[in-house]
Image (cartoon, rainbow, N blue to C red):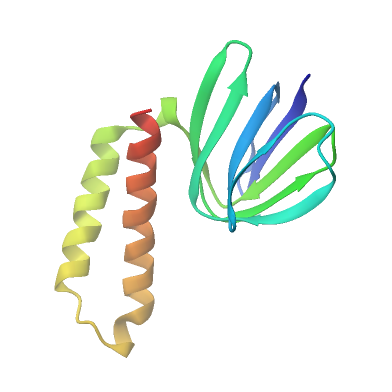
Length: 135
């Protein structure tokens, strides 16, 4: 049994292949998609995506978005998708440390709420990428 997995980001198609199963981070919790799955559309949250193949499993870090499933295919629409094998741990740790430093020096007031949210997003994504790279 197999299902076509297509991951699309604003930069284009990040991944397109036939897999045995994919496990995605839904807003209500993780869920798996197999061939012949019931048709649905659901929101996704920042989290790890597990790609299950006959040849082994692979992990990817995905941002929030949507998944559309139709029984033969699972289309994942997200802002970014980083395969574990593509994570540069040194660069990610450096970016995380920089964002953490900026967060700690940023006043916690209404005027800085947007920048605080952006930096918290950078930290969360960096932590996720480091997590999937270590699996």
